[in-house]
Image 1 (cartoon, rainbow, N blue to C red):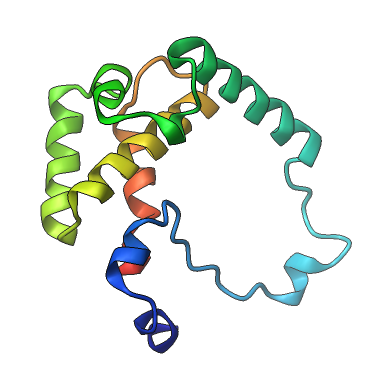
Image 2: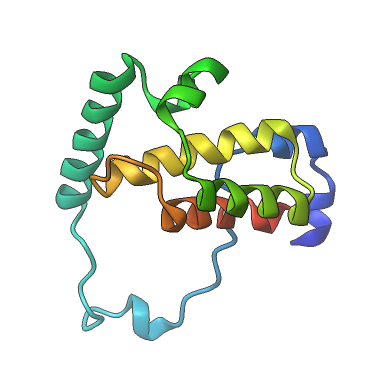
Length: 133
């Protein structure tokens, strides 16, 4: 995986919001008697509701928010700001990554029905960028 990722330039990787490495699943998980997961119809309802919240709040989806709109719609509390700053410094992420993490965290908050981004949303958004380094 590292060899393959090495073929992709850093600036290109920086433009990919979700960088998730998916481990191979054991056959038991794929079997018919595996525990049920959330049905696609339920996920669809949640995603549509989140998108509707985004449009009502900003007139556009979170992925297209400009920097000024990010400051307005993705305002962080002091603890969340410190968490994000530690992640940016520790993972040596770019300014572009900073903005992308905010957009993803805002989307995660919307999916959960939260009015504001909290540390859990932020930590999850950061985790989606960790595999690139």
